[in-house]
Length: 395
Image 1 (cartoon, one colour):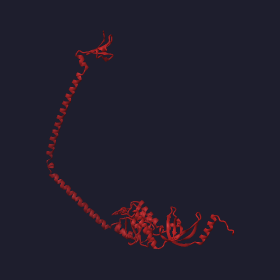
Image 2 (cartoon, rainbow, N blue to C red):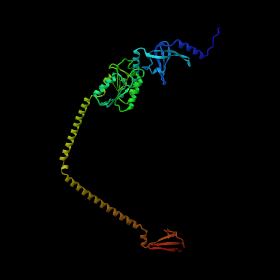
Image 3 (spheres, one colour):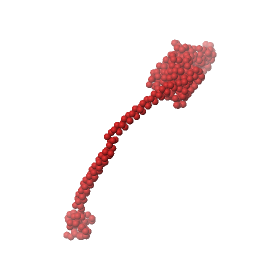
Image 4 (cartoon, helix red, strand yellow):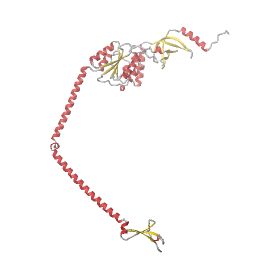
C-alpha cells in the first residue's frame, strides 16, 4: 500500500478551502431563496437551491446595506460572489457580493407576498385609517430635496393656500438606503410635532425604482405614525405597499398637493357660508327670545305685581298666626306635663311622709324595715322631719 500523508481535520479543511476558494472565485449563480434570515448583526443568511441541490449563502452587513430590496423566501435571484469554506463546520458557502431578482417578475411576486402578509395582519384595514384635517395649517413632506416633484408640489400648495406652512424632511426615494431614510423621516416628523398631515412623495419609475416604498419597514412606519399619511408615489397606474398602508393614496404627488388643502377661494366660500349660517342662527335665537319677552309682558303676573305681593303678604300673615298657635298649644301641653311630673315626684318624697308624723329607724346608716331585725341594747338613729335622735333598744 503506498504511503500517504496523514492530515489532521484542520489541515484537510484548510487544503480544501484553498482549492475551492482559488478555483471558484467570482462566479455567478442562480437559484431560489429559502430559509432567509436577516440577523440582528445586519448579516443575511439563506439557502440557494434548485430542483436537486442547495448551497448556503451569506451577505455581509456592509453589502446588505447596499441592497435596494429585501430578499424573501421563494424569490428567484442571481448572485455573484466567491465560494468560501466555513472552517468551524467544514462546510462551503457562497459569499455573495451582488444579488438581484431574476427579472421584474420576481419583484412582483415579492410585492404580492408582502401585500398578502400585511393584509392578513390587518395592516391595511379601513378602520385604522385616520381622517385628514379639512383645513391643515402645517404639512410635512418626505421626498428628495432635488427634482421636479418637490418644486411642483410647492407651487401648487403656494397657489392654493399661500399661508400654509410646509416642512420638508429630505430622504432618498430610490436605492439601497432609501427605505431606512424614509422610515427615519416619518419618525422625525412625528417627533417634531405640530404637523397636521404628512405626504410621502416620489415621481414615476420602474418597479425597481419604486421598491423602497414596497419595503415592510416603510409600511409599518406609516401605520405607526400618529400624523395622517398620504402616499403619493409614482404615476396613477403605479401601486406600492405604502399606498395600501397610508391613510389616503393620491395618484400623483401633484394630486396630493391638490387634495390636501382647499384653495383660498374655497376657504373664503366656507367662511361666507359659516357667517351666513351663524347669522341666521343668531337671528332665530333673537326672534325666539323676543317672542318670549312679549309673552311675559302680556302675562297676568307681570301686569299685576302689587296684587301678587299683597297675596303673598297675606299668606305670610296666615303662616305667622298658625305658627304662633302651634307654639302656644305646644307650650301648654308641656307645662301640664311638667306639673303632673312634679306632683308625682312630691308624692314619692320620703320627707313628705316624715312631715305627717312618721319616723325612720337607722342602724349603721341602714334603714330598719322590720322589728325583728333589732336586738336588745343596740344603738340606733331615729330620723324625724326636723332632725335625728340617737336611741338604744330595750327588751
